[in-house]
Image 1 (cartoon, helix red, strand yellow):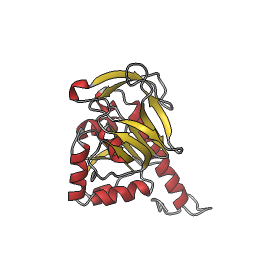
Image 2 (cartoon, one colour):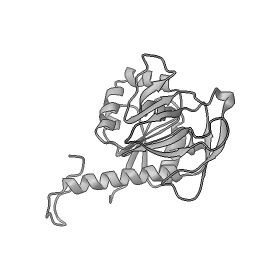
Image 3 (tube, helix red, strand yellow):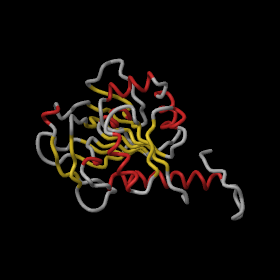
Image 4 (tube, one colour):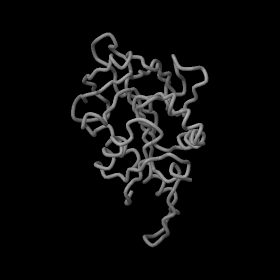
Length: 225
């Protein structure tokens, strides 16, 4: 795409500023999203870490939950970290029975799977599709993916320790999620992967929108069809 991609960060609660800073450093126009009209203006969305129950309650209260569901279901690229993974999961374990999710990932996620705040830790995780070797991954009251559907690509697992083999990074189409917080480590590679997905998605949408055979002077219709 020729223009700068607009990537929103769901700004209801959680580590919003850190994501905004990383996205801006990668050349995206990074904007907070709190209302449906702000959501409608972005090319991609980051759902940050925080308290998933609080975030969903605020999304319901502000009228943002259904637009979020529709946007992700309609193809908006999304990246969730920690609580964002919980929000993007189609199914939850160890959650209040009435806790809704945005959905978009055919996964079952166990909330707070690694334990309480005191059990937070840092580990090295290698991710498929992310070059440069393993990342330093920070897990804070983190979930993990208990089960992934057939259309979900497992990008990374824990290696070693009591959680050996647990799934902590996944991708399904243009939706990516990690159990950990890359925005806290200074390693921008996962965000760069996501910004690349956003750029590609927007470019494909623009190409589809331009009539076949249109010349250089044809109007740029943009958007998804």
